[in-house]
Image 1: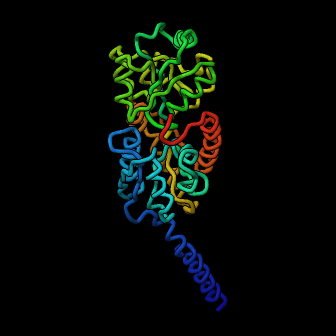
Image 2 (image 1 turned 30 degrees about the vertical axis):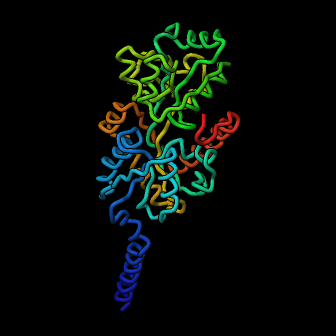
Length: 331
């Protein structure tokens, strides 16, 4: 009888353990995702943001076992997509590929639109996208120091084409002014294509677009590349030094970036899983090569690290925007 009671006790204990293992909460965690995921991106098809979103969808979807559908919602430097994402249900089925604009837009449009701290759950960084300072070939001198000497020798400021209000190239140029003690006259363009066309034609003196946008003009000797942002040289322009190498460390971290966030309130286990899967995906050699050929350097973070980074960028760029008097729709 005692043996039977022990056996019954063992069975009851195992049943209880198995019931806990297969509780609704555990099943929910194991099940995610059970349907396609929407990945919002705030830019039109064909640009760098769209490339990053579609690459993530291509490589991350199979790992998660679900299709990731990219939705382009362009407008206001990514604000349209961010506002839509912030209002979505925080269940892991609406994600957002965002840029530095997440942390600069509140200073241009107001925090009531999409607050980068309160309205989102950080997931991971995805990639850095360096910018390159390029000049018209008529500007004397071959390097950055000669370019800055020319700036200081002129009675009027050199003109610099920008391709987005408070975009990475615009803010990096603002930092260059401060670090080098020079002055630019900013000229606004709707895209890097027309901006660089005017630099090559001599209508504008310089610009600081992404490396990919400027690569064709540099390789065809129609643009002079002077320096790149970022901690290391771009593999697409290995002979072009970084600003930090040339003694202007203030611009070293002024590159553009792409990261993933979700609506505020996303369960921590889902955020953690997405962050870890993105890390694994971005470490795969074929994925790294795919990004590097597009001028994007893979870079991942944990959810907590991403949260700290967003807060840091929000504070840093807010000070620059406010001090420079940058407004939405103006340069």
